[in-house]
Image 1 (tube, rainbow, N blue to C red):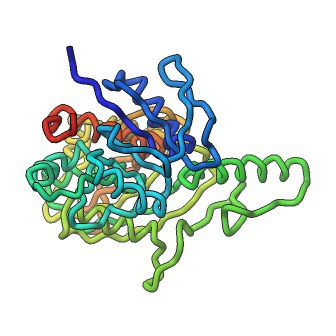
Image 2 (cartoon, rainbow, N blue to C red):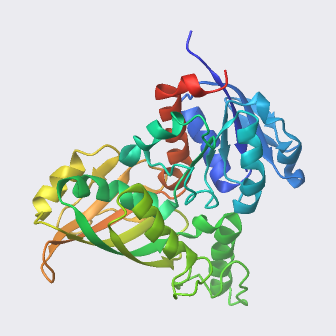
Length: 347
């Protein structure tokens, strides 16, 4: 009989939390007991899992010694308080917020890219017991860059993102819907979640600004890419919110230290786990956010050499930000842990 695990979902009522629960069911993850946790405001609500109605418990009251794995997406401040408590209680935490990502004792993992980083983590007797899930826009980019970097060292990346509103939560999705409705009804446009109108517009501003003029979202892409892939890669990012409900898209320009043709890049990407290349140089021969929504793959299109620089390449990358960009990646980390490091879990 295969081992089953008690799993706690923190932030279970949010977009990512609900997606995690659905993916656990879809993948038939070996769950014994599933605990769904949220704030006291959501206590008593129900969430369906495998045909049963699970009652939402208050995160602040939960005893994490009952759980082997904790999948966290309750927001950075909440994770900062409760993830260490869960870890101390013997629960291995996979955290989807930004709070722990750049901490030295916390590995930042994309299974297809740097699964080997978990080896040192689990062999460290003083490990934090917390694994971080990267930023959604970083995940899909490093998955696409990894097979290319293995072939020809990447010197520099310039990325412009086209990020859907679901990355900012349910209220942001509601704001896009309501603004669009109000425009057609000739009603006033209300801004709550975004600094400017999002309907029929694009906003080059995600998260708060930092002293160098970047936003925190851009800094995440820069710093996380270095931690996951290679400290030597120079990254320039411009992150833009677009009026799309689900899936992020990225236009990525890459400079290598040696030649890499578009044909060779396409072949490498087609052979890489988790990537689907759809790249036909004709109408509709590429992937857009609509097609990627609800899918698990990172899609790559528009692969072409950039002749304006030495050893340059352009690619277009699209992925469902709620799945591969968040929930799916967290579950894949959990699958990696139970397949290779289950002996380190409190059973």
